[in-house]
Picture 1: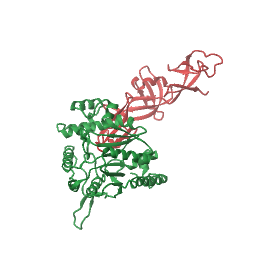
Picture 2: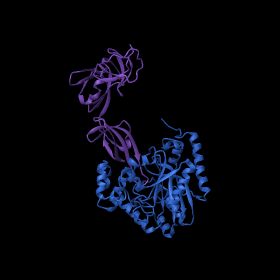
Picture 3: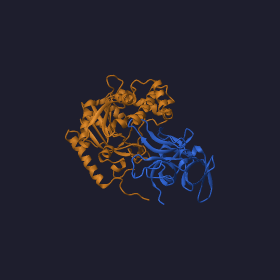
Picture 4: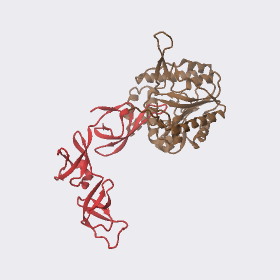
Length: 328
Length: 189
């Protein structure tokens, strides 16, 4: 049977439009410029755990088709704008990820991403708190990743030995889950991948619930091995990275941006090494992005927010599908 | 039996884990923005009846379990086995003590129970939500006490003990909720 009806109620869509207008008002009041970077790109990201949707483009009359990626985040385009002197910018638009739909996931979703020049992580954390206050009238608490683990699981996630990891894996029955990351465990980067996967599961199972039940919490200073595109903190053990959780839902991920092109390239190469060990296709490094860093990315912090999820919480809906006109 | 991938997990699906058939209660796909995807799955082990949470890597698959529920009428207990019959085909199945367990005390002749079969053999017996049983023993209530406060224990014909109001007497038939083991009312004549 055909199911032509929208997955959201019409009145929800009216609220959605007002929600978007409210976001734009927030940034307009702060002189942050809206940019609509492309959804299509020649390159994608090397991140081991993010899979893009791909398509191909008949660029010329010849038989050759160019593979194109749908953007998983506007980050690289936005940083190219920043390097070109755009100053503070935000993006409110679509992103795409090749993963199953669930209560909290859609292959096509709306991302709010913004960058603030000369902001450090805490400045941006404070601005995220203001936005949440503005949109949801909620105050946001703050805790470090390390404090959260010590509080709820009584161990320090920043000083885990290999033996500790194995012990925890046994204790929480995660050996099967971690098996793909244990094969090449002699490699330091794989050891980190295994540790990070373990921490993710424990965080999801035992921490995010009690930590964010009916409230909003920002977790700061993730382990350096989960730095992604963030700068490391002075102690080199943690990254200037934070996440926002509201009522069990991961809402935002932000950091003080890494501006060093050499370090960035090393992380990309490392990603590809892990990719090949896991039997995942290697991804070309986006040289335009690296060149932009070489030209000079101004000191800045940036954050990405899953807007559909935020709106879902705002409306008290149970699934992200109900927030958008036609969910998959 | 077919294998099921985590993408196919849903409430009610029966799978094999650690050599035991299990029923999936809840399945949640979790994808940390920067981490490896996984599924948080709550399952009930069908033999031990334990509920636990398991973590699966998304995309992994597990073997399905040949488990089905069937409604059968209770016939009798021969001292070792409890015998049930399909009212349509008259086919009979015997369940052992392990399968019947605590629920033996709620089995009333001719009541239709749900038997869970694994590879054709019963692993659990679920009685109807409400059963009617005769009180074989209880203290006489105090005269004039109609509502009472705490009630009193009463032994039923199957050996089950439930708390009943003080006015209910030996020899009466009462209606009991088998899920909570609580008295509901006197049976309608």
